[in-house]
Image 1 (cartoon, helix red, strand yellow):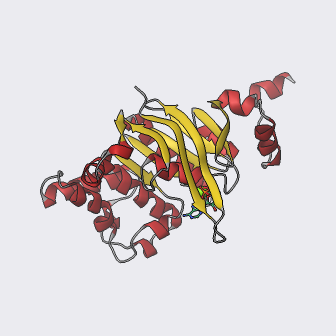
Image 2 (cartoon, helix red, strand yellow):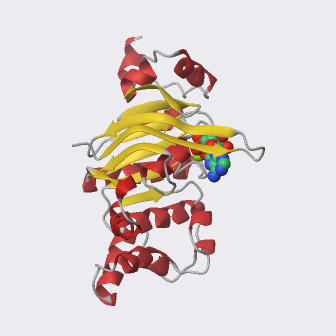
Image 3 (cartoon, rainbow, N blue to C red):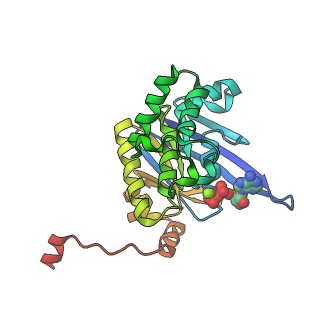
Length: 267
Ligand code: ADP
Ligand code: MG
């Protein structure tokens, strides 16, 4: 059973002039446990809208969305609240997504309090400390506030907050786009390590093809609310069939040339 399955999902918005915009225009997809589906496309192609629809952070106009086999469009508000701990999201702007008035401890503990099933105060604190450790932050961070952290540390807190309730599926909406290149690589490595350790299923929204190439098992190329090409990362990015994918790749920054040492020696 796929962890995520969408059938013909649609969502349109209206422009300030009242014109309809089909942000997500009939998307179907399936993601199996432990896979990472990368969604690439230009700005405005509908990637974030799709990510939010998958978790029902916004309501779809039509279509079916099954998470772990459950039809989430049919869940009541209370049922949905109860499932949230298993289906999480990490946003692009860590600082904007963290409440600046709360301490790191309060931020990471909050989902445990909302879920009501994580025991005593002492047990919750233990869980917060363990999760911070998993994302590379020591207990020294517990009483600090987001403004006193670097961008990379803030995003680690955002990831800890999402992992603390032990999710099965995580939507990552450009989680490293706002970070410096060196920090970006270490956060991506951490996400990959956590995925293996916890058998997480990821949907990874990005406009950066090289990041997707390294990080994702499967790719969907999105253009004006539709998927123009889908498949394994190798198929889509090494042998793109669609002119749109080819143009997107040609427009991207060229990858840094890399020649393995042995081959260099043979040449
Ligand atoms: P991406 O993440 O690929 O940049 P988005 O999903 O954010 O794209 O946006 C897709 C389209 O939907 C864009 O035309 C955007 O302007 C529009 N859109 C997204 N959210 C809203 C909203 N809340 N209200 C009106 N239009 C929206
Ligand atoms: Mg977006």
